[in-house]
Image 1 (cartoon, rainbow, N blue to C red):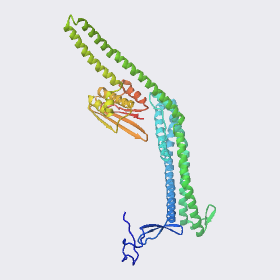
Image 2 (cartoon, rainbow, N blue to C red):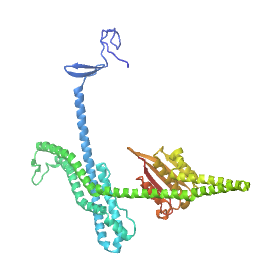
Image 3 (tube, one colour):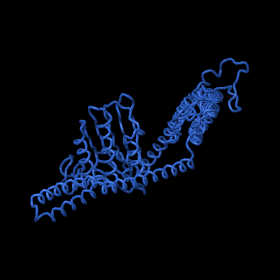
Image 4 (cartoon, rainbow, N blue to C red):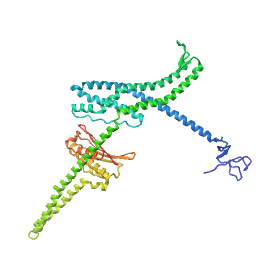
Amino acid sequence: MQATWLTRPGEGGNDSCGTAPGSNRTSLHDTRRRNGTNVRTAAFGQAPIDSRETGTELDRLARVSGVRRRLGRAVRATGRLLLGLLLVPVCVFGSVVFVLAFLSSATFVGLIILPYVVRLNRWIAGRGRKVAAGWLGEPVVAEYAPIRGGILARARIVLGDPMTWRDAGWMASHIVIGVIMAALGLSVWAALGFDLSVPIWWWAPLPEHSIYLVGFALDSWPRVLVTIPLHFLAVATAGSYVLPLLATADARLTRAMLATPERVRLAERVVELTETRTAALDAHGAELRRIERDLHDGAQARLVSIAMRLGVAERILAADPDKAAELIAEARLSTEETMTELRDIIRGMYPPILADRGLPGAVAALAARCPVPVAATVDGVDRLPAAVEAAAYFVVAEALTNVARHSAATSATVNATVHVHGDEASLTLRVSDDGRGGADEASGSGLAGIRRRVAAFDGRTELSSPPGGPTTLTVELPCG
């Protein structure tokens, strides 16, 4: 770092900057103690900077920043209340339609209409949850019972789902609460607008010739110039706190009414984990039975056949060497077939290619063996837990088998991606084809087995297969 020095006139031979020995040197930034105050002086005659003045300036900027934040939060709170007000007419419509559909559910037509009305109410409640979540900064989670089955089954599901009545109760209450909250919020801005407009018209002829504000008659300019600013400041300060409180209260009330209660979610979670555990145990038992059957009917039978051939060859070796050689050759061929069958059984337990090349290589091998052209893409996938890799391998293998057997597709794609969310990571598999669609889990296509295997890992399975295609299978497996 190069230092710059100042030389007083008459010293060092000239008045220019230099580094002559003996000159009176003052550093570019010199901190001195003057009268107990830290003073920082700058070169070339700049004014000293007092640290106390700097601290005061920072405090002022902090106060201004705080005021701006409160003002911005008040404006956002007003927008939140206005969004709630916009939902009021929608809630009125939904409530009226729901009541009519419920009253008509005693008839066959009412039973048909009711599930569709409940779907509409779910959409309206979803808008309310979205607005509340945007203000609270956290999602408002709701879990609905899926509407499926026949006419009576669907009606029974929507009427038995507690969330149906929570949605109806929120819509009915929001018709009143939404209007009240919005009116309170707008009254703050109306008061501020009134204060800004008073100096323009207070002096105009009125029946009483004067107006009163918080008990003070505004009948002269001095009173107007004193009362209006004070009232404006008081309303603005109170509004900067009251408006966010109103928005928070409304959002929390919405969350309390529309979110699935924690105890209900825990109970559903326990039921889901129990079902998953049962399915995993059933799948494990079925897998063991399959392996036992394959060994008993395949490899074991072949080994018995080999032993018999070798025994016969041993007895006739001296009498008929040619026949013995033929039996030994058959035994050798059967041995090779047995080894191939054992490899297939081992591959069904844990594919060796996963240990050798990992999931990317295994997916590429599955795509290469599929008779339908497959474009495989694996992004960000390194070594994963062995159980996760095995489950992903079987999902892709079963999905591509379905593509080859049932879809009549001309091409397919496989995408595998690892997504990281904080400390958690998940593997997403997506298998798509351009076939005829209409895939059905109940048709024995292996989709139910995929769902059970994924559920054992607390994963998620989604299938989109409209008639005419395309078909997309999406699987998400936690990697933790």
